[in-house]
Image (cartoon, rainbow, N blue to C red; front, side):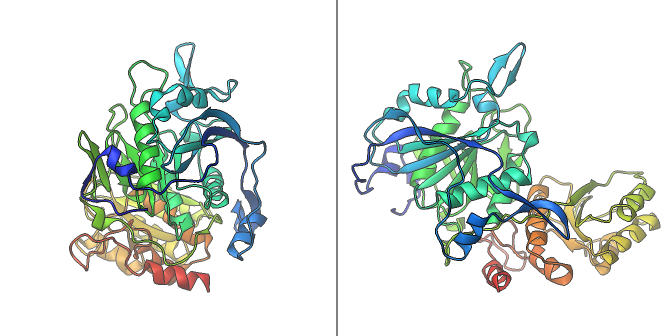
Length: 444
């Protein structure tokens, strides 16, 4: 695949690719059933675990396909510009009207495939071949969590060598959590994974679904981007830097502390921030689906009940992580000594306590104020400019890989997938820090 310049038109994106083999290009549907990952029981209780096929991949053996059924051909057309797999999990994009509300078409399978097949854009010779995996049942994103993250990560692993890129159609409410989780789970990712959705269903006369889906498929098949991203409205955002910022607007996602990876406009795709893209991986793809998601988020508010915090910590023996959403750069009330004692108790119980900021833009600097310094002395970890979504999923990922105490704190302070700005280095960079070194150490 060729390098992308500063500004590239839609036609130029797909130019210069070598002709593909004479295999008939199709849009097809694989109807997948959950779960695609195992739930294992260990000393941490029940949680998503490694399937036998994943273990085989990590040991260098061939993966074993886990999806039932065979591809269903929907559209056939000549296409020299790559191949993309769509994972359709549900969400507003493909919903239908039932009574007075929108809902996933649970009893009408294949509707999104039919809509794609009817779109003239997908018959253009510049478009890639498209296959689709449709989850069964289709899910509202509020029902997507670690189990589904595991399914999606293993889906990418199983079909990694078969496609140029991957598009995940997902509801917007938890899309940033899924994108963040996948960014950590897919170590050594060398292809583009784009999550997208819409605020208005595709079946509505006026909608944002059509543009979001077309753009995501083109970007996934043509960009030399080695990371998980979210495309929405006109922006391609790093997945673990994105947040949902608007519950009703079409520009529903933003990246408050990191520039967009690319912007789509009338002149094509602007990739002025190409230097911020993650570099190609130095190792093969490894999928980590052993997550320990026993993490709680607690947002401070004036006059909060510190005894409730203490009770939660005392009576939650299985809690693995606590994300504290503090004021400003990491501030809190200095007169609430019971709150400080509760946090001290959490740290002593081997609960990882990480501080994020309540501010939309900015970072935590615990050394700035008195309470922050006291928390820092207790062992609370500063999340820097990580989003809450990235912080929660990173904790689940690192805890699932067995990190505790000082080693977990070091890893939380280190950028593994570009989720964190290195404040020491100054200007924005790709943001990998010592992440490659830590990944190598974790494999030992």
